[in-house]
Every structure is written in structure tokens, then in C-alpha cells.
Image (cartoon, rainbow, N blue to C red; front, side):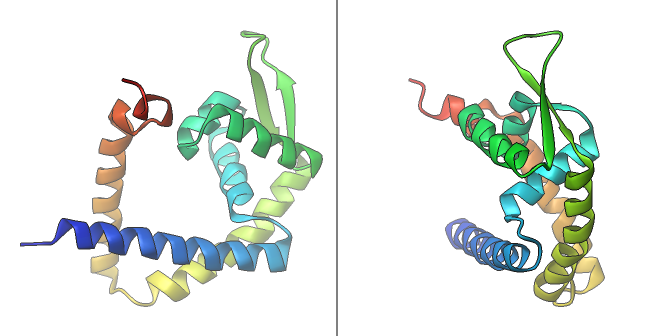
Amino acid sequence: MTDLTALFTDLVRLETRLYNVLDARLKAEHDLPLGQFEFLRFISANGTSRVFDLARAMAITVGATSKAVDRLESAGRVRRTANPDDRRSSLVDLTPLGEQALAAAAPTVEAELNTWVGSVLPAGVLDQLATSLSMLRQRAEADPRTDRREVFKT
């Protein structure tokens, strides 16, 4: 029987170490923290996004998301505009500078992930891992208990 606590520990430690190495390389080579890369990648894939949508996708608070968008906006990588349908929220788009930063950084991320994951696991195992993690993530995202706003409600 699989020790689920050990599996959890392995997942968390692996994620932490991969995040650290990717973040350090992106900062050194592209002056782009991994967290900002993830925001740029989400906006690129999904188009104009509300701050709330970014917060949900990144599993962080709206306040933390707003601060991250502030940093991206200050760097000229995104543009924030008022939401015409809801004046309480704002919409975020990539700027040409943001598109350029993402295009330059994406191959670096892929190369680093290939070093740590893609070149280590056989293709079939990697495919199964990707499918399994996606399934677990979808389940977690569908459960309101995993939403930061819900965790501390009594």
C-alpha cells in the first residue's frame, strides 16, 4: 500500500525545489520571477482576464493577485483597465513587452523542466503522471475547501 503522507511530502518537496531552480534561472536570464511568468502564461492562454480569475487560477488571494498585477504593470508587461461590466473589478491584458518576456522565457522553462522531469521519466510514465496530476488538480479545484477564501471559514 502506498504511503500517502510520504507521497505528499515528495510532491511538496519536488515542487519547492523545481520552483526554486526555475525562479532563479528566470530571474537571472530574463529578469522575470516564476510567479510573474505564470501570470503572463495564464493571460496569454486565456486572453483578457479579471484579477479575480487570475487569483482563482493561481490559488492565491485577490489581494496578493492585485499586488502581483501591480508589479507586472509597473514593469510594462501587462495593462490593467476598468471592467466596463463591473466597475469594482479590473481587466488585465498582456502588453507587447509582456508577450516578448513570455516568448523569451518559455523556452528556458521548458529546458529546465526537461532537465529535471522530461529527461528522467520514460515518455509513458510521464504521460501517466501528467494525466494523474491533472485529474487530482481538477478534483482539488472543484472542491471549495481548497479555495483560500474557504479554508478558514467556520
